[in-house]
Image (cartoon, rainbow, N blue to C red):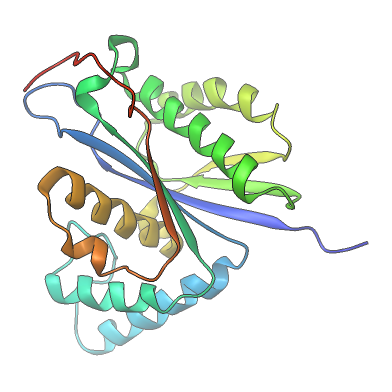
Length: 219
């Protein structure tokens, strides 16, 4: 009997789920998927110890908070990884229907869409998929998310496990953070540099509201 094949999917978001003048125009969820999470985490762990030895306090790789120099070092390290691929889902929030203008409802939309894409495109030969989300939702919201998403994922061709784990505690989650931030900067600010700094990693993207015609809110 062969070894079980597990696909690990690490997810992190960029933008916010606020539908007011203070909110972002876009919301992004990126998935870094791999069968060998230890390989990619080891690469960033090496960089973390290099920075620690150099006296840096920039030791959690969160793109919005890291210095420009640290972001450059992290991007260089990520570009050298051969074990990861990335898929990004995103929306223009102005096309979000009122029933989805809620953190649980909106995040559930993303969770279901990402799970279906992973199952149909990537995990056709895997025995299970472990999806690791950042703790963007509160405990009660996480329960609501799982209740909304699990029934649909159970109908797919591969078993799924859903886990919430703070991105600051997982280096693969921090890699996902960098991809989400890069795509967010690209569509929110028209800034191509973060995206180009990660060039070379297989990376696909999809706009969930690409066919939207009704703008439900304005800044």
